Image 1 (tube, rainbow, N blue to C red):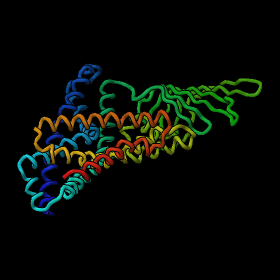
Image 2 (cartoon, rainbow, N blue to C red; image 1 turned 60 degrees about the vertical axis):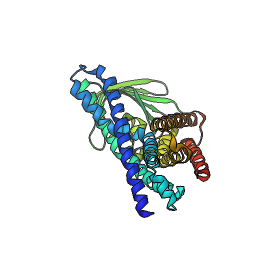
Image 3 (cartoon, rainbow, N blue to C red; image 1 turned 135 degrees about the horizontal axis):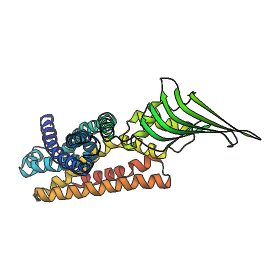
Image 4 (tube, rainbow, N blue to C red; image 1 turned 180 degrees about the vertical axis):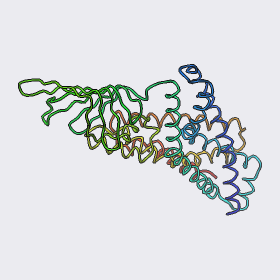
Length: 350
């Protein structure tokens, strides 16, 4: 069984690689075509568009991984069935559960790869791609961001980089919520420990009077470091697990809603399990009574299942965010439901 198991694993991995190459190529072409309209804006040319599209490949591979794993298993196990190799294995005493165990090992490898892809490689590539594109087009990284830092509320209207912000306003409130001070700042740069301010105007609200003052230079002590700004610059889906934990900690410490980011964190944790379940779900389709079906029909079934599951997974996360469901439940409910269906189908398959 060890020899046959390695054969099944190698075969499924080979077909999964072919599927990944095809789907990612199509996805990358779509990204290139959708972004080509921005060519010519600033110094952003066709070569930059191509570079951006290629840098987005890790992200697209991570997004498509469950569908890739499903189709790769359908094609791999289906090819074994069509060539009567699966029948010979079964005749030699190898059960469908043994084959499922080999596929599960393959799923574990792909799931671990998907986790590494989504937690390290894709966020870094996305951040680099976005920074290159924004620099070439002459765009600011973000605009009109709001932060809370203890008794201060900070609005940033122009974010040149994580260390350089411009046109910001700092509102300071008393413990009873009363506004005590407004500071308008032209530019702020982080020197490693504090924010150095330039072009500052203060408005102080007292009990009976309002005072104003101005300063060319000042210093702002704030818990909002460039690392926090970087997290807000990136989309939540592009954050690593450690980045999500830091962002959730910051939001919780300032009594802000971190539900969206908790959902994203749990989705990242559930993703490897989703890949494994999708691969196991494909086995009954590629064997048993489905073994006589053509390759086109198996691919169609697999694509439909993948699309439906992707939509249901997105809807579940969105509903969890809207109705305040526990993050682990909202992120894992579709995968757990598919796992139950898979177990039932494998139990009945002969």
